[in-house]
Every structure is written in C-alpha cells, then in structure tokens.
Length: 230
Image (cartoon, rainbow, N blue to C red; front, top):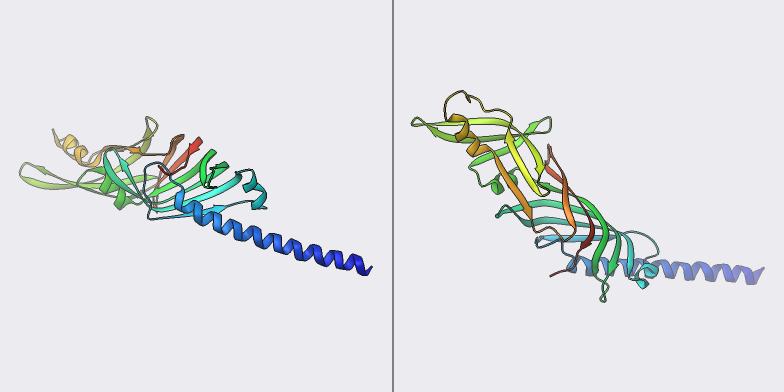
C-alpha cells in the first residue's frame, strides 16, 4: 500500500513537471512565433500568438499544431494603391505546419476578421469626405462640392459590398438634390469609391464585408495560407 502511494505521488509530481514544462514551452513558442509570423506584406504594430491544444510538446515534435490564434493590431496595408490602417486583425489558423526553426510556416485553413475604423476608411478612400456608421448596416458619407459658385455639403447613406473577390465598394443609395443636372455626379465623385485590398497572404481572400457601429468588419478565409516572413 505504501509503495502504491509512493508511485501515485511520483506520478503526480512528474505530471506536474510535464505540465509546467509544456506551458513554458508554449509561452516561449508563442513569443518566437509572434516575431516571425506575417500576414502577407502588411506590417503590424504588434502581434500576439495563442497556441491552442494540450499537450504542446507532442505537437511540436511532429512540427504540426492543431489550432493557433493570431492577433495583429495597427496593421498597415494598401487598398487600391492607398495606404489603409486596420485597427485589429484576428485569424484562427487550423492544422498549422512549423518550419525547421519551429516558426509558423503555413496553415491548411484559416478564417478571421479585420476591423477598419471609419476614420481609417475615409483616409483610404482618397476622397475629401467623412465616413461614419449610418445605422442598419449602412455607411454615412459626407462630402462638400462646389456648385454654381457655392460649396454644398451633402450626406448620403451608402451600401458597402464586396466585389471581384478583394474589392470593397461604397455606393450612395441616393443623392439629395439628384434632380439638379450635374449635381449627382459631383456628389458621387466625393462619396462613391472602390478600394481593392492588397497584400493578403497567399491563399487568403475576403469573403464578407459589414458596416458595424465599431467600424467596417471584413471577413477573411483561406486554404493553404502561407505565413512565413518574407
């Protein structure tokens, strides 16, 4: 009985040591991965990696992880040749392959969300206009135009859609005073725009765009996504 008790105590101690070592290894691997992982050509102010699953050590021996969450903040990307800042981009990576240095190399599948503030969206639009949430999934776009010697300010409710795969399109539903010849085109020149999101990782694409109170939410998904720094 005493021998059995000693065996159980030893098992508990060894189990605790294994768990502790496993968690230390995860913490180290997350820090190293955060320094090396890249989502395309975009640059981020900060990157955090959360490796899921237990035990980690048995996964790393196979150089393959089940699930990893990557969170980037202050991402600098491009949209239609214009710089665009993405406040936060989170991605869930599945069936992740590690390289020879145990850094994240690619994921068999990935899905996530990028959140762009309306101020950053306005800056990327290339228009002299303000963008805000208009309610009910719409954008409120405000711009000023010179018409007959006067500056007219018009606000329109606009629909945002995803076209041609990676292009965000903003179009006014209707323009106030559009019956005045030439006015509608002038207002739309301030409020309507297309912006193609560029620099995504190989294998990743946009699948949905949605106007929310906290910003423009862009859903991304992909297969065989390359995540190495380059």
